[in-house]
Image (tube, rainbow, N blue to C red; front, side):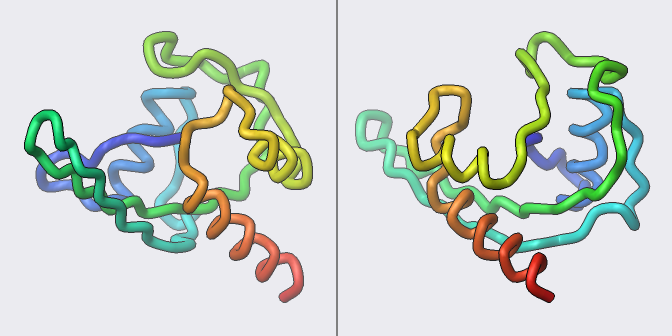
Amino acid sequence: MAGHVSAGQTSKEAAIREIQEEIGVSIDPIDLEFLFLIRTEKDGSKSGLINREFQDVYLVKKDLDISKLVLQESEVQQVRYIGIDELKQWVKENKSDLGPHPEEYAKLFEVLDQLKTS
């Protein structure tokens, strides 16, 4: 899930809102575990603007029946379950189903590997 923080919201509140809007799942704030922050800066040399983003990444552990999700069609094309090893392979192969976030994926895998061993 991804989204933008609205004025006056925390990133946690925005994550809860985006999950509800995009897949129809209610999340309790306590279910969100903050993992890390990524800062990105992209130079829009054609426009002269610089895009600076702060991306907070959270983990949610929740049993879901994905057949019962209510997808926001304008935002979500499909939802499917894949394991972490398969996701790592998709990132390695640069699958077109994934967004272009190599730094975020690398950090996510690092943190998940740490959680798995602790």
